[in-house]
Length: 151
Image (tube, rainbow, N blue to C red):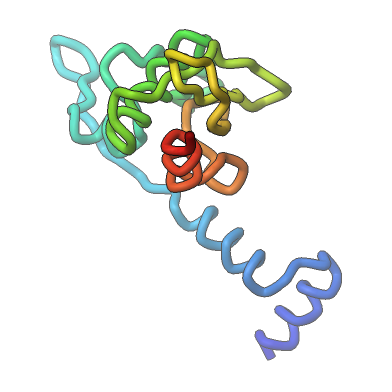
């Protein structure tokens, strides 16, 4: 019976089964974390913070509604995205690659990857508002390296 309902839902929403499974996974990733307020205030451990992909210096906004508090990263600046992209490329490619100033278009950041000495365009990295690289929309690292090595 649940399979019939699922098929009806798939048809009604026009989602593929993979899309539905991904949606379910996303909703099931919510977790509850219990923290204690001490005399020093509320402390979130470095390990906990890193689970969210946040790092030292990340600015957070606390949204308070009734008895609920949501912690959301503040919109990143071009300088923040530049630092994230530079660190990503350094780890993946090395220091021979450079970037141009990130450009915000809608809710995404676009970072042109270049060879610094010639300004040769090698590709683009696309990031979300909160600094997560969007792999499907970014050029593959292997292609960036290949272009960098062309004469």
